[in-house]
Image (cartoon, rainbow, N blue to C red):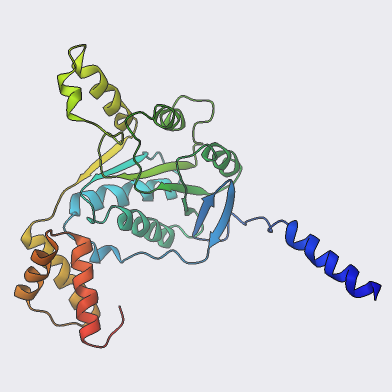
Length: 271
């Protein structure tokens, strides 16, 4: 009778204090997720083909070139991609890393992380790895009364004792160029009304490459759909595509992708 009892006790102790996860191999995988001070490997980095990312040609060229420089071990910039929702900021970062990994096998990986205190620990880990990394912080934004977050980001970008190492560059996406929430009352402040605005924009100035993404035109929207439709072998009606965007109140790469998904569903296909 004692053995089953002891076995249940041992099982309960294992559940309360499980064995630590095996260490992550930072040289093996194309991407990782860093969360709560721990890393998880991502065996496949999902991203659209660069040729399918349309309507943002200038931004695409700049991001791809910068990531290729990092993969080759050359000087590269931290990147801030800001602006309209759904215009491919996150997809472009992922696709650029995939492209750089194809051209420089094993030399670069993406690490998705949050802008919290554990980021300094991540930098400490990556500093010791003989590989280049894009640390990706998606959809970043600080509240107007949050002073600690922007201050930490400035320190990570340059100058601080916990600044990111030379083999790491940050890629941050945000809906706001200033990253920090702003209010109209800033313009009405009778005491140095520009000081607050300048201080917030100074955070964006820490990025060597800052790129704006704006709502796409009708022609760009239709070109995005045409590119996806040709790639997946789907037929489409431009008038129907425009009606789709009107019902959603906007035109963007994301709305275009939703329409392509609808086309595939109508055709009994998977995209």
